Image (tube, rainbow, N blue to C red; front, side, top):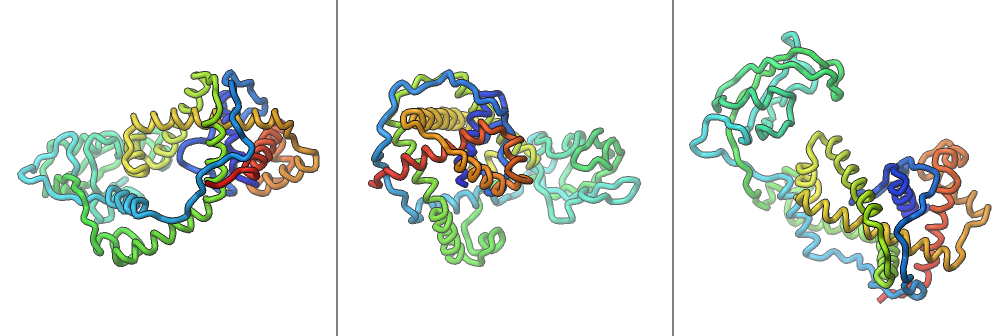
Length: 364
C-alpha cells in the first residue's frame, strides 16, 4: 500500500478539526497514521476548472546527485556543529551569554542519574530555558574558572523524571569559559569527529552514495507528485482561506510537538534540524504547502468524480488488509473500526485515482 494514502487522512482531519499530517517529515512504513474523525467533511474550497489529467507531461525525476546537493549536506553539518572560541576579556556571566560548564546534580548528597555533564563540557546559553528554573539565573554574575553550588527545586510534576518531582537538589557547577560560536572548518579532523567517516573524500563518496540511494527509493513518489502538480498548475480553484489556515496551523503544531520532544523551542528546532530556517519563513512555507495539499486533494477528488472511480468490495477488502498489515493493526476489522469505512475507502479511491493519472503521464 502506498504512503500517499496518508494525505487523505491529513486533509480529512484538518477539515474535521482533527489532527493532520504535514510538513517535511514523511510518514514512515509501519508508523500508524494519526487518528481522524470518520465523517468526511464537505469542502468549502472547490475546483473551478479542472486541468488536463490525461497524458500529463512532467519533467522526469533524476537520481543524479548534484554538487549543490552534496554541498548542502556539508553546509548543514557545519551549521549543526559550529566551533567555539572564548570571548576575550569577559570573565563575568551575563544574561544571553553562552558558557561552557560541567555540572553534577546531587539529591541528598548523592549524584542522580541524568544530572551530570560527565566532565564532557556542556555549552549553555543563559536565558534559553534549557535547564530547570533557577539554574541559568543562578549563573548570572558568576565568574569563569570557579565552581559554585546552586540549591534548586525540581518542578512538580517533572515529566522527564517523575522521581525528581518537587525534590530539593544541589547542582555543583564549574564554569570554564564564556564562549561564542564561530564557523567550523571543513577538515578531515572535523569529519572524523562528527561523522562515521575519517576523511573529507570518504565523506563525500559515502554521502553521495546515500543520497543516490534515497533518490532511487523516492523516485516513484516524486514522479507521482510531479504529475499531480502538473494537473494542479493547469487547474483553477476557489479556495477557502480558513481551510488553508487550519491545515497550515496543524503543520506548525506538529513541528512544535517535534521540538518539545527534543526539549527545545520551535526556533531552535528549525535552526538545528531544518537548516536554520527562520520561524517566519517556516510559517510562510507551511501556508504554501497547505494550499498545495488542499489543491492536490481537490483535483484528485474532481478526477475521481469525472471518471466515476470507485473500489469494488474485493478491492476494498484487499486494500484494508494491506493497510492493517502496513500500520501494525491487530487486523483489518480493527483498522476499519479505528478509522471508519468511509475514510479508508476515500484513501483507496485516492490511490486508485492517482494511479489512473500517473499511468497515462509522459516524461519530458
